[in-house]
Image (cartoon, rainbow over all chains, first blue to last red; front, side, top):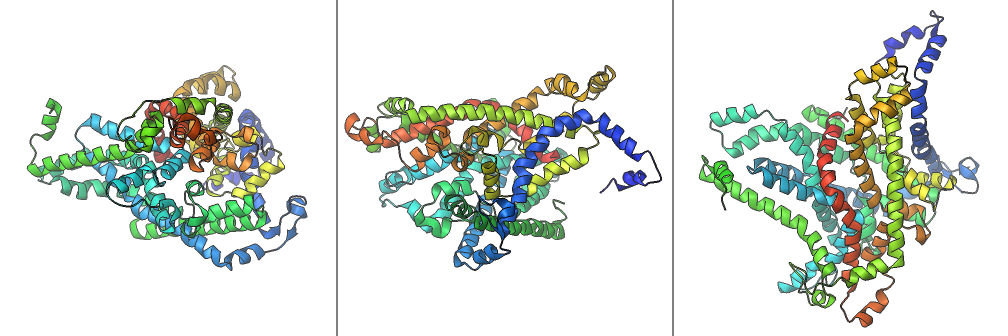
Length: 317
Length: 300
């Protein structure tokens, strides 16, 4: 919208508009040609699915196509929202995200602060190299490690037995699922997430520290009054982003880790969409659940951004 | 063991500051241990004798070195075929990613491009709004791509986030060469092919690694788009072997091999085989990614 004034010459007072548009297009014709394939890619694999959301309001049958299928209005939304199971799904989705934020969000910050205080640069590099690594390991491997370490003869139960305890079926207990989900997430991503804070830390003016040292500030005082305020905007932005993502949990890992025994706490909207939609071929219903999830997610992004702008002047837009 | 460097680091400090450093280092050593031990444990079990594993004697080093589980894994037709599939999907997919991302990023990087604003918006919208799982599945179904390699390599064709990193890099290239080429009568396609791409090797290498790792690790697209087992990539086989514990030859393991090979050592060997390529490219990844993340974070 910012360039509306520039578009003003389009008024009929100037007869050469069409020719000029033609000249611009001819000047840029190769650039448009270069963009053709990416344009088609986004059209087919991103915009067509967005258009396909229509089937949430229709009783979609593959044989009839999108337009041949009957309109049903909000039937599937009502069906979903009146199903008591829907609330369990919503609760699980939000709780897993919530636990991830409460326990997972501070850890990369702490890690970055600790790394920042480290005086020995090679040791710092080693810690960074090691802690980023799990981020690049596939989610299947991580899930495989979790399953094997928590099995009846797995590493964790071996340690418990060696300490005089009893072997415990961790993955079969609904109450343990959130913990397993959150801890494996921290193990995999905390190091990687600390990069962004380290970048923010390195942008703090060193003169501030020197001045504080001259004023006799100790290390904790410097951390509290210089370092933390210095990265506070970064923390706010990332927290907003995380709150905005509260409806989209790491469901690929959930899909790999949950069992019928743990649906109680592990089944989330996305895994339900996958089961109903693809395993059960209930296309319209599952799409409706997806639309509901998307809308609530959008509301969270907007809400988190609004809140942050009111409270701290930091916002995404 | 106190090196001169360490000593200078600790000198002129109060006792509190000194103990803070010690605690800090201890904590970070713990971080290293917690991060590495699970992976290290997988490795030593995969190399150990099944009997020793069963007795719980494998803790900090492999015992009764035994490569039989690797022999079994690498002789298994399913594993070999899926390994081949993964290599195929990763190389074709990454090639498509690089070409499409370059074609997308270059026009958007040109400040004099008349379609720049609208086409940037066209791409950016897809970062915030998605049709979701089922509509995407139906598009792939309607195109007749189900159960083909093309579903796997085309659907993740451009990662908008990576593409914007690339655009930022192109924008930073000196324009003098472009201008000289235009005066010489080169068109935009020639400029892209002869000047922009050859000058963008570092970002190309970064993108290559990022996209390749993404393809190698991906399992969900294969799970929903492929039904024929002969087309499964390694990650899907890994899922059935490691997470669901089904290995086709497992039935005859116990009796035939006298516990030299255990289900567990087999599972962990499959993990090792699938993770080795990642570990091999990790040093290169690490060299580039911090830069990539920062460009993306600051200017994306």
